[in-house]
Amino acid sequence: MNNLFYNRDGTPFFSLGGQVHNSSSYSEETMRRAWKAAEALSLNTVAAPVFWNLLEPEEGVYDYSQVHMLLQQAEAHGMHLILLWFGSWKNGASQYIPVWMRTQKERFRWVQTIQHFETRVLSPHCEENRQADARAFSRLLAYLKSHDTKGIVIGVQIENEPGQIGTPRDYSDIGERAYKSRVPKAVMDWLQEPGPCAQAGRAGGSKVREIWLEHGGRTQGDWEEVFGFYAAEICTAYAFAVYINSVSAAGKREFGIPAYVNVWLGEMYNRVAGIDYPSGGAASRVLDLWKRFTPDIDAICPDIYYNDYLMYGNICEKYAGPDNPLYIPESGATVMNAVNTFRGIVEFGLCGIHCFGIDSLTDREGNLKPGVQEYANMVRIVRAAAPLIQKYQGTGRLYAVTQYEGSAFDYIDFGDFVGRVVCTNPLDDPYAEDTRPYLDAAHTEDEHYHVRGKGLIVYEGNGSFYLAGEGFRLNLIRKDTIEGMTTGVRTSNFQNLRHQEYLEVAEGHFEADMKFVTDRLRTGDECDHGLWVHSDIGVVHALLEEGMK
Image (tube, rainbow, N blue to C red; front, side, top):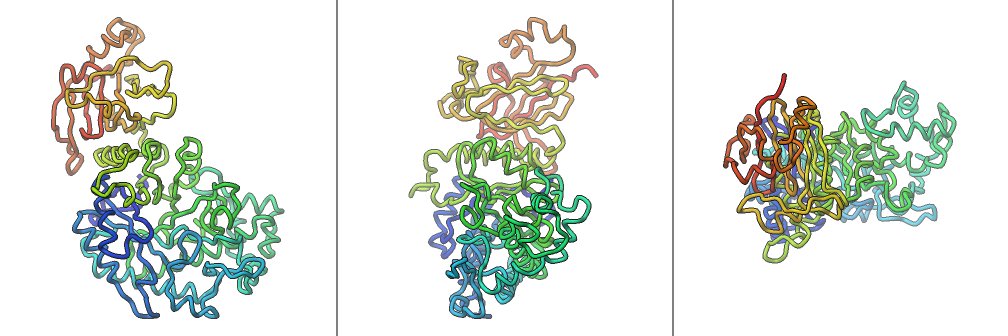
C-alpha cells in the first residue's frame, strides 16, 4: 500500500476525515459544531485551516493560540488533525495573508492581468512573497514539533488549491521578465531525458512533454517559443511549484511531517487555465512538471467532487502512482462518493479521503442531515476493514463492491470459487431478484435494504473470505469440476445456499496484529441466504472447507 499518513509507531493510517468550512477554525466556539459532526460521521481525522494573518499578525511576531486551540480540541475528541496552511494562496487567491503584507505593495507583489489590473493574488515570481511564506510556515512546523508530543497532527497541507484565478499568467513587470526569459536549464534537461517525464505508473504519460514535442521540441528559447499555446500555464506552474516546494522544504527542516498540496482540478467547465481553474496549480496537464520540481512535497492530491464513474476513474488514474499516494483531501458526503471510495481503494490504492464542510452536515441537534447517512456508513465500513485494506491492498485479493445505476449483480472469479454479488436495492435493474432476502431479526427495516451495494471482499484462499459493507450478499459456488458445478444442489440457488460447506461464519472485528475477534456466530437462517453484510456489524469472516488442491 502506498501510504501518505502514519501513526507515531510507524504503522500506516487510513485517514477518514472531514474538512471544516474555511473560517470555522477561528475559535473554539465556531469549531464546536464541526467536532459534533465529526463524531456523528465516525471520522478519525479533522482537517482545519491555520490562517497566516492570525499566526503572524505583525511581521516577525507569532501568535500560536489558534494552533494550540485546535490541538487541544482534537485531543479532547480523540481524533487526529491535519492542518491546512492558508498562506500565500487559498482557492487561487490570497485571502488569508496578513495586513502588513497587503499594505507593502512595492515589496510584496501581486499578479496583474494583461490590462495591468491588479488581482488579489500574490505573485509566485516575487522573492519577498516566497521568503515571508517560508518563514511563517517553518515557525508553524517548529511549534508543532515542540508542542504536539502525542502525534495528533498527522500531516499538513501547504496552501489550499494554489494557483491564480483571473489570468493565465502574471503580466506585471516581474511576471513579464519570467515569461520572456529562457526556459530554465533544469526544465529543458528534464524534457530531454530518456522517458523523462513519464509519470511513474500514472495514466496519460507526460502532457508537458507532449506539448513540447508538438511545438517542435526546441532545446532552448523563452516559454512561448518552447511551449506555444500552453506556455502561460506551464510557466506559471513552474513558478508555483518551485515557490511552494521551497515553503515545504523550509518547514521540513523544522519538522519532517508529511506535507501535501491539494488541487482544484483542471477538468472543470471549459478547462481554461486562470478562468475555469487556477492557472499554475497542479492540474493534470502540468502534473508531471509539478512532480519533478517538488521533491519536498510528499503528495499532490486531487479534490474530487465528481460522482460519475468515468470522470472519477479518469482523475484517480492521473493522480495515483508509485510516486504519488492517492489521498483525496476534499470531496462531497454523497452516496456516490461513498460507492466510489471502495473503487478507489481497490483500483487506485486510495489511502485516505476527507469530505468538505462537515459542520454543515448536521442539524442543530447534531443529527446527520438527509442524504449523508450512506457516506457515514462508508466511513464505518472502511474503519472496520482498515486492517484488511492495509494487508491486502494491491495484492489482487481485495475486491470492491460498487453498485452503479441499473445494476443489481456482479460476478467475481475467486479461482476455486465463483462469487455472485447480489445487491438488495434493485436500482431499476430488470433482472434483479424480486424477493427481499432475510438478514437477521435486527435488520428487517427498509433502511437495511434501500442502500446502494458497496464494500470490500477479501479472499485469502483456502476457503477463507472476509466481507465488510452494506446492501449486498455474496453467493458462492465451488469451482472444482464441471460435473460438480452442474449438480442439482449447486445449480439451484435455493439449494446451493443451503448446502454451503461452511466451517464457520462469524461477525467480528480486528484487534492488534490482525487478530480477528468473533462477536457473534451465524447459523441457520442467518446463513441460508448467502453471506450478507451491513455497516453496523463490522467484518464478516466465512471459512469454508478447502477444495481440491
